[in-house]
Structures are given as C-alpha cells and as structure tokens.
Length: 455
Image 1 (cartoon, one colour):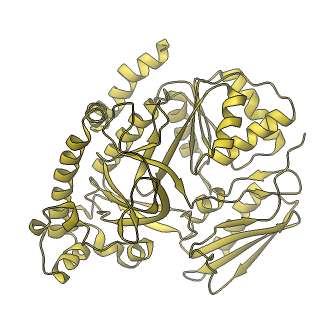
Image 2 (cartoon, one colour):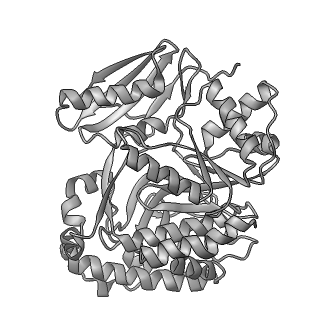
Image 3 (spheres, rainbow, N blue to C red):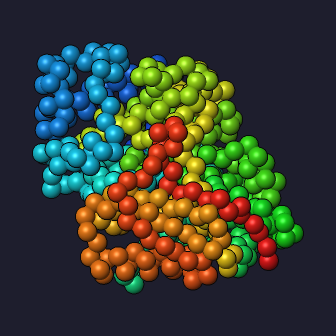
C-alpha cells in the first residue's frame, strides 16, 4: 500500500466521512468486515433480526405495507419464520411506480433522497432511500471491492458511464475532485471510438493503476481492440466487471490482455451491490447481511444449479422499504458454501440482463447501458427500446408517460447525438407499446450489426 492510499484510508476519508459528514459508513464497514467471517447460521440470525425490525417499521409507518398486512389479517408478530415471510406478496417496478407515495415511510418523508434508475428492462423507475441505508450500501460495496484489492484511495481506472445532461461546472469540478481524492480516474465508456480506446490505453499505461473497474462489454471490446491491433498495455493486478455477467470466454480474454485477475460483481441501482466474487471465484457472494436475496423458481426457493428470479429485501432502507422486490434478473443458485470460509451464500451467475452494443458508421461503439443511463433523466419516458438493424440507422421506440415539452425532447435528442454522433441516422418513434420476447422480457437494446474493431 503506497503512502497516499494509507493517508486516504487512515486520515482523509475518516475525516471527511465520519467527522465532517457525521456518517457511520466506516463503522458499518468495520462491522461488515467482521460479519463476512461469521458462519452461515450466524449471518442468518443477524439477517432475521434485521428483517423483523424492518417489517415492524414498515407496518407502523408505511401505508402500502400496512395494507398488505391488513389484507392478510396478520401483523409482523405473525411472521415467525422465513416460510411465513414468503407469504407476503412480491412487488415489482410497476407496483413501485403506482404506489411510491404510500411506500415512503411517514416518519421519513422529509428525510428521503429520491433517485431514478434507467432500468435494464427498459422501464425507468423513481425510488427513494434514507441516508443511513446509503451508508450501509457504501460500506457493503467497500467490503466487496476490497476482495479484489480495489479499495477507495487506491490507484484505480474506472471505465464507466458518466452523468449525462446539462451538468453545471461546479458539479463537474466537485465530481472530478471527489474522484481524484479517491484515486479514481474515470473514462467515459459511452464514447468508445477507436480513438477513445487509444486514449484509454494511454491512461492505463501512464497511470499504472492497481485495478480496473468497468462495464463488462466495453472492457471486453477494449481487450479485443488491443489484441487485434497489437497494442501494448501494462499489466493490471485486479479487474472488477460490472453491469452485466462476464462470460468465461470474456474473462479469458480480459485476463490474458491485462495479466490480472477478474472479479465479477452484480448490483442494481435500487440497492447497489448484491453479489461479488471473492478470491476463490466459486460464485458471487450474496451480501445477505445488508439484503435478503431470494432466488425463486415457480415461487419456491431454487435448488443449487437451478435458475430462478431474483427477489430482494433491503434490510436497512427505512425511508422506502423494499420488501420482496422482483428486479427482473435471473440467477443460478450456487453451491452450499465457498472454500474461502465466508458465511455469505453463493449464486453461480446472473442471467437475463444482456444489453446489445450499438455501433455507428464512424466507428463508435456504444454500450447498451448508455440508453437506460440517459432515459432515467426524463420522466416523460414510460418505456423505451433501441433497435439497430443496419449501420446506417438506429431506431428508438418510446412509450410516453406524458407529453414531451418541445425543449425536453430537444435535450433528449441532443444528449443522444453527443454520444452517437452524426454518421448514423437516429429515428425516434412514439409507440403505444413495446413487444416482449418469447420469454416475457423486454429487450432494451437490440442490434443485428456485429461489432468490428479497426484502427
């Protein structure tokens, strides 16, 4: 550990987070680091106690969940086992969209922070959380990333989505300073032309990062570009992939190019980190001391090796409880335990979240994640889908929640043009509905154009 990293972790970060901001993030981080080595049974006991407190709070303070209990003629005191808990209904994005006001706790109404998610399912979503739950989430993310030696304060390159829209100069300066102090160098993954890839390679060679944190597809595309064009890039010790599953063939290419170790992560904007690979790479550890994650097949817990839908309960979001929330992803249940000794359960991998990459005539390679990232900023959008059948044209289908003001629609088009450029035509069409796949899922981006790499 270099001198700056030590100073950041021992002095700068505690001073800012604990003293100036009066947050408990570092306390929660220390506690989480201890809990990871608890037995599976000890983690379950902790989880159950947190869950009971959450249910009591939701019943007493949230109109929506109080009605859920009353409709079933029960109270939280009647929930004595996990089987009892499983009788509560599963909620989804539409339930939140229809009932968000009733889901926010009455005693937190003036304390919650509202955010939007772009929705990998093509359905933007507005959510709320309280400050304390965010501190828990950050602590859990710090713990997970520490397994890959990519802690805050270390020299790490992020190949990531950047904020879109009209960002003020002050906010840009603040974000830049924040990243610099944390040891992060952020490269915009939404503008990955060959020229930008060359710049990314130069940054990695110049900064000599200890780690890389990146969206899976842009990072894999960068590695293919490096191999095809015989580019030279320095080794990187650890690579964390995010936003979508990393397949074995992608892992092999990334590890070959950077001569480092790939750690897959899984999260969503609703709760942040859900699963993380440890040094044994036997699956992704569910962060079940901050969440209760169910993997359900036909409504019942899936067995090891079986695929099921993910249902999440956030144990610490008292501002807007997420209780049995279906996020739209699928997972394969892992084996009973990991040889690392951690008591956190395993899933093998996450499926059902692939977003096709879009390519333009002038060589820009745009990860599918860009479009949900942008659309979350526009409350007029109910659902959307991006379709590319040729290099000449991209079609964006939009189901409106309400009418677009002329200036808002202009801003949307301008933001897309900034990333897509002018070489490929973008056609916008307002539609009544967007068809589902044969498996009942939305595909947010659909591309029939194979991605190619050249100088």
